[in-house]
Length: 300
Image: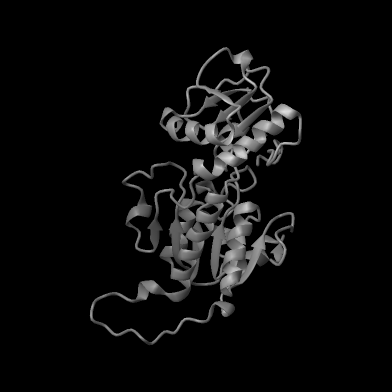
């Protein structure tokens, strides 16, 4: 099979090796006659944005878990599959669990300044309520890891569906009202943009923490800062932003109740992700159902 690698040049070395090992029958190339390619492997930032000449491509396999930067491309007519990488899933669960534990234990109280602060004892995990917004592969993995520690975890999904053993709420107000720690892992769609705004943030319990490694568009920036400034929210840990890299003069950097991490919660790892790529390449060539096919209407 002939496969076009339509991704930034910096990714070529790692991915070509990994895909070559996982799928040796793939003839992976970076350029050529558009009509000759059977499959396109895609990541934003490459040289190819017009997909209309690739009339014989049976699949566009994204290297990103989020597909908002390609699903709206008007030249995309081929089936599109999103990336579900077990390494990415594990790292997302670990990131969210680490910051949730920081919030739960109140680690920021213990300044190394000679003051003996033993007046506040955190509750046990079984008494702490966490809501995970988004019950896809990533949200489900996060919820399961937190449940394993003992937290009272519930998910939020408009469909009301989620992994076994995790209660899932379809009502946003109810999901927010219980969230002492809120983790946001919804995709970027017209229905989720600015979902957390002044009105919805006010539904969170006083002192709640927000951990957002999902999409920067989920939260209204100004409304978040206002909710922190008035003391309604306790802290926000933000890994994703509307503009990346986050501009040096953005108020998030200097806000005492915001922690910025530079989009490192979860990264696709070629060594673990290449197995999925290889499976979908073979399925596309055999005319079999594609794994993790994107629903164009939903946008994910």
